[in-house]
Length: 572
Image 1 (cartoon, rainbow, N blue to C red):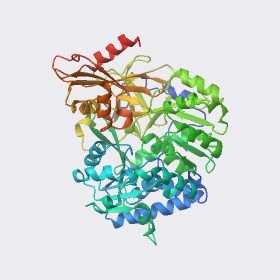
Image 2: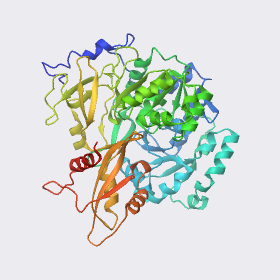
Image 3: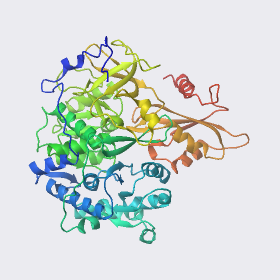
Image 4: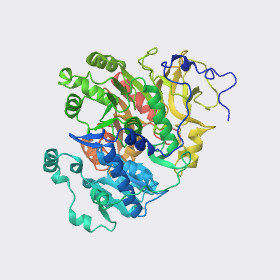
């Protein structure tokens, strides 16, 4: 397998010269099941809090015990190696317990956005073939409404109040009462509905489950992303992929990381690969505390900073913009946080500068994708700083820029093309999609679909996305999925969806619609129609009506022309 072209400017790996002094160019990576990061953390720091949730701590000893008990309970439900088990939870201790329990049972984790509508959930559940799902009780009706179209045999439900202190639990229950499911509906389900806490308590003498895991072949996670079609596409992440990327992340930040003393403020969701690896797995390996925030709430976030004094804060641009715009931000003491990191979407220079003035600290960026577990690049701690760059490739990560047309010719330094990466964190492929896998993985290189360039120092810069994908607050939105919902409205003849700049979210969804002759519909009506079938971040914020949409010669909607139309009208 060739590494680079014979005359490649990337073969010299100019980025290595700018690594921080403690970061190695290469390392070795554990060929072990990734659940062992918890064993490591628990063996060194058994009595340190692994999670903090509304003031209630769960130690590493307790986390390991509960994960082991739940793994035994899953085995009792005949869940084992090769099975897929979904987790449809916000940030809460139950997510962490479930993640490690599923892996201990030998099964594969399928993380699901808890805000998904029944339609969105069904697509992931059906494609993955998951046999069980662990979810909030209030999500049970959504799951039950489509379960007959999936392979789900067991539904395991929990409530956030189960891991809260008594006073916080009482407040939460008073607020959540209307969202709790009808017990008669649960009892009538043809699939057994189990209590999360009940399953854990049912195991009195847990034993480690002996499952042979091949770390480089067996899947730890089936992490869903989207493709050019918008159809669900599961990135197959092996135990080795996740353990390697966790190790790379630790190596990159080791100078600032004190094992057993750090705490991570987690507002970014654990169901997202960024939160899963950079947050949950890294903190478990280092014996750090996860301060879990279950929803996007800046008041709650600022209060947590003052109360718990976190030291690491991985986040996304939307969060940083929200903090800057919050009236209480200037009063908040950010001094405990020594590492601010931004990922998932480009961070505007203006936001970087304003946030650094607010906190008197450096805001660093990283880059990655679902398919790369996720991190491939990050800005160094103290070496040469280039704020608009995504930074340098991680140890043992190769990167290059190739021509957009063929993807076969490496481009000179400074020229713009498609970014390709290769390393131990790159996925095995896409679940049951050999054609998509062959398109994305060529000779070990993952073709990211992002247009980028590399400068003479080996720093990389993202220019734009090759695909039409929209990123709203760090979440991927696929135009074809939104268009599909719009087309389901009886008055819609044509629909085209693009992303337009948004200072707060990075991008927002804008729809262009042509109505059928003689039919009428308002923008508000179409937006409401979308809300019934799409998660909030996917719903168009604007609908513009046209007599007809621009098309190619074969009748495909020209999204490029729609973007140009928007730019011409808005002056962007």
